[in-house]
Length: 464
Image (cartoon, rainbow, N blue to C red; front, side, top):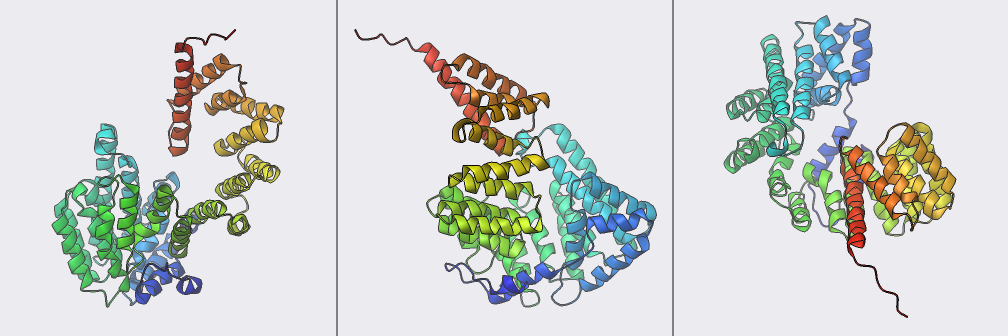
């Protein structure tokens, strides 16, 4: 926490020291984790969990701890996972009249509802997802309302009602729950954040409603400096990819949002966006550093490492990754990034050893398998090792096996390469697709187009 407070702000911004101090203080908050709660409930000790959350409720109404109860519930139960669902259900089974147990259940149901909704536009979201979302959101509302009947001061239940109402565009419930929550604590920044999100135009709200949230919130900045970040969220809405498809313009809006306070959209998105804009790795490093400073997001450190590598600061990049690996030696994401940094600096043998560490942890790891095949095929000239990886993936019926087999096809094996690429595309069509996979799908399609062009072109006559 102290390191956060003394770490320098980006020189282009003038951040309010009170807001920085309050944002850093959040890093010192501690509450029972999902694992700790589950362990206690597995022994039937629900009373100790209720007692802990009762203390969190009282803390939420103390100076400098606005929102603490909601934060405690979120870090434990705001997860679309079987573990979170089972733990919340068990708590309710053991303590059916506990307002805390019911709030935990509602929090997890809202997370599951958001998971069912997904990130795609409405037109790209299957109707069955909407039906599941509405069902889960309705169950969450029931759980939160039951909690409030038992404990009218359960401010997190109002927070949950706002998030559930946002999903189904119920602006009446959003307004009612926000008003009731702010009667309990008019300086709770998490309530203002959720209220602001729920009245965005894409959820049935409007610009006027967003401005009303900001106006109401700013009256209480003296009670809670973190509320100052709410006003900075207006440019964040303008930067939404739904409205802006230009990375430079989006980055400019994030910078406007963060002019005087470290607003969340800047901390989450500015580093990635600066990287997309390109040609300014200094800003990329600074912005990812700020993300880690306030959010303790390990991914920011890893992305920063790649920018440092591009700047020729390989030692700094490796040092920052190694710091993460000291805490989590088997963190595959960190090992992958270390391998990429080493590979980018032509440290091929060291990169190989790092990717092999990933394979030891996860024998079918997609990224490590891909990098090793390329290394063995083009850098280290160890084709037999590449073939072994491809065969292991084929045995496991992984579509990537045929993509990597195409890497090994020689210059005179276009027909075989084409066959492998087509098989990869046929098989991967039934798999979940992320950005990494989509990149390789696009490359495979482009390669097939080039093969087709070659076949369509008449052979060149040899000059005599």
